[in-house]
Amino acid sequence: MRQIVLDTETTGLSAEAGDRIIEIGCVELVARKLTGHNKHWYLNPDRDSHEDALKVHGISNEFLRDKPRFAAIADELLAYVEGAEIIIHNAAFDIGFLNKELELMGRTAFTRQVAKVTDTLAMAKEMYPGKRNSLDALCDRLGVDNSGRTLHGALLDAELLADVYINLTRGQDALLMDEADAGAVAGIVTRVDLRQFTLPVLLASDQEAAAHEEVLKQLDKASGGKTVWRQVTFSPMA
Image 1: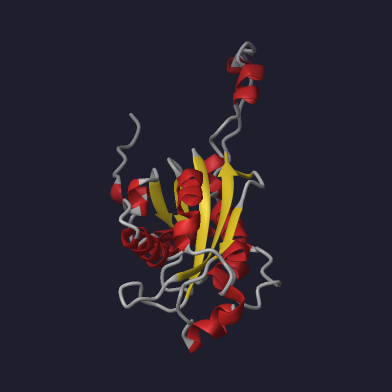
Image 2 (image 1 turned 120 degrees about the horizontal axis):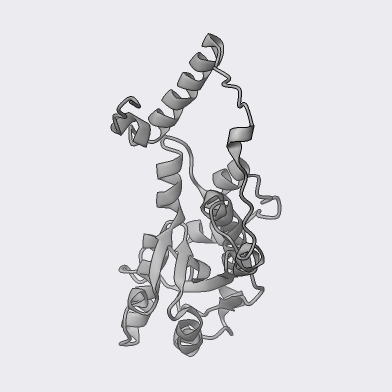
């Protein structure tokens, strides 16, 4: 599926109270790879940013005066994201603003024009319960270089989030095979008669077994007791 990593900057925290979007950054992934087909807009919100918001994004009100309004880029944005999975950190915030901008134009909600929305903040909270899961914290934890991020910027944050998302979901492609790889091995079948080998049975030492059990306990704790091996009772082999 085509995926779009999206981020916005706004004049403040509440779309319902009249705050507006001032910047949108989008990064495209196809087959979990960056394509370079990205989108970026600065927008005139027809209002000044709150002082606290200015401290976050550093985009001055004067800079935005001659920029297009959201209505002028809405069709281009919607054509770009149509049918894609949208990946956002703290999705409720950005989606709330996008839906409000479209509502002001009398247009259909953003969420009805895309395949689905994935919230990386919710993913991170499930994977790292009790830890800080801001974009900066995830960059540090996952080895994503965010040294150039002194202020928030929609396109830069979307690019960082794309790297974070790929790292968060890296295990998903471990069982996948490209079509080219599948075709290369499809006609090759090698049968080996294992009866000709004497296979040694290596048992874990008490120390190794204890260390293994400790790892299982930590995984079980991190998953909130949802690990399969704690839920399924295996019958001994006959």
